Image 1 (spheres, rainbow, N blue to C red):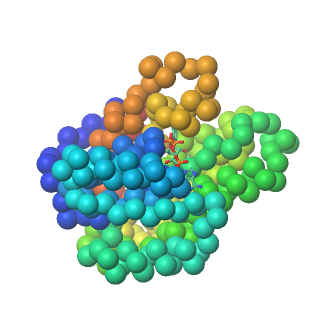
Image 2 (image 1 turned 90 degrees about the horizontal axis):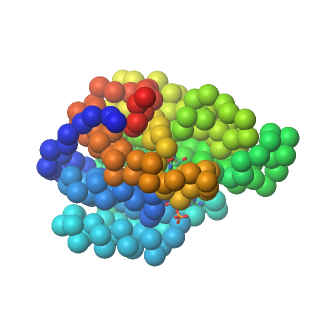
Image 3 (image 1 turned 90 degrees about the vertical axis):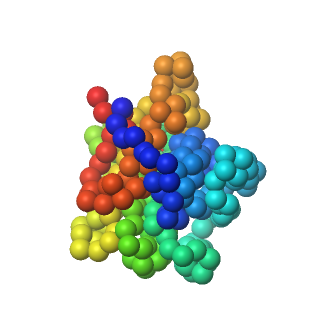
Length: 247
Ligand code: NAP
């Protein structure tokens, strides 16, 4: 497990946007960023899940979060531009983005991937992060130290049979991170990828239905890396891929 011991108030001055904040790893990241003092912007598709996370953050004594209900499947570049200007108006700065929301699509042979499945996976996993990051970079540039975290997967680092659209979308994510990191090498923005490794969530259960979930790490177990990369301790880290569960 990636080893980092955060101190209380570590993220106190930060505003952090988390996509897919209603469930799984994104939910836990939002709760943990708030626990260490951040103001969290919760973006996701299912409003009731975001509201539950909002309530949990307040119940644990965190700063009042914001909710952005947005289905990445239908969102357009204009949605992201509007979101960026709202964030700029309502918060002193934007210091972090965790691109976490993703869909798995169907696991099937390459020749059988349908146009519909391909387009849906690319829309949620690639296009949304592309247009969202384009819109947010001008806001992030105003932060003294801004961290963009993308979420990759083992199948986005080495292609694997039957993981088609999902695996290819994670290779694109990796490339996006590297381009952004290189272009911003001399700015206050850094960009990195996290590979969470097998983690007990709905997506993992969908991919491996026969697996015993109790043998997997929980989202809470893998959080030290997420907190590290959002904190100023990682100011010098960019263009890298970190493994939350190194072998
Ligand atoms: P998860 O439990 O399925 O959660 C995915 C999140 O993304 C949910 O909050 C979901 O919202 C949101 N989302 C999905 N489609 C969306 C859309 N169209 N618009 C807005 N939000 C949407 O998955 P997870 O396991 O936590 O995965 C988090 C990230 O880690 C993903 O990028 C995944 O590829 C990566 N990852 C996970 C594992 C693992 O073992 N779990 C391993 C490697 C990589 P709703 O709940 O409202 O649908």
